[in-house]
Length: 393
Ligand SMILES: [Zn+2]
Image (cartoon, rainbow, N blue to C red; front, side, top):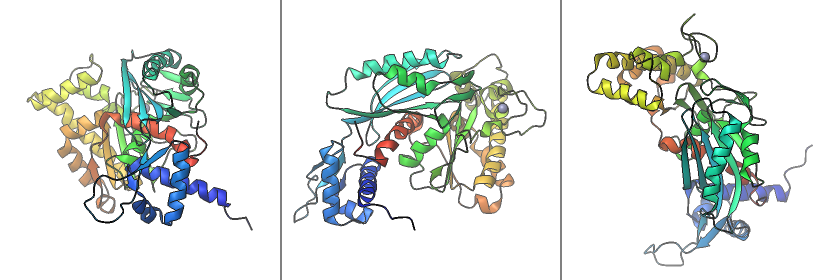
């Protein structure tokens, strides 16, 4: 028989659970923690003291409650002192942020990214942004790690971007490049942008409390972050969720992945611009112009948006049948397409998805908006801390 968990294991687990609670929900009274975590008052007191001793939480009196009697102390995450660096490598821009425990973005920088820029070229630009932010970090602050959201297929073991069809990346070691440039010895975790954004919306966004979620993220390409049974579903190597490369047209249009007829050739940036008669244009702004033109009554733009909306509903119907999510979130350019073509998407979804799978599915836009990749990248870094809170610094 295997031995049960040791006292030390139980303590570690409880420390993680308490820290996770205040990280996700913010300031919480000891009384609420006792109820939520199912631990007695003296255990909560001891755990809080341990976390407080290493500077992860602080305790104080609550705001005036107006009630008689001794108020329960409030436990707060040390948001300004404990932080992670978060990066988002997107098709047209690079972003870096300092995110505090508790999920608040404390500082941020944004740079244009010429399409085709490689990892070794992107990392120094991101490092420059971090150096600027570092000048404003309090001397006693603790950096617990860094996370990177990147549009591409990420090898889970080491953060190598195996393929980024929309960025031109093949076997680009963005995790190692960022770690080399960061100048502080902390772990760097890399994830696909859709996975990472889904993680953020599930932890503290529109999908909080939902355990089966599909997050569609669009830019030039389209990918999905999938939460199944409360866990991220990323496949054997980390490459799962590449829904943009579902084959929807036999021998259809060529895709940047090298195959033909992929879903993203119809709903991604190129497909929509082509259908709108603007094949020479590129980028998010060009796409937004199409939605604007459709809104103003431009017939060609309206047809393009309707067609893309129909294709979006068609693919979502398949995904709803496969994963039976309770929520589908439309992020990045998929948000714009969803808002512009909700009727087509709904109609196609209703006629193509199985009734039982459709029963409880809600269609939503992200609560964290464009910050989802950054906040999710920070969450990747915080995961290690939450697993073993006393192993910091
Ligand atoms: Zn493809």
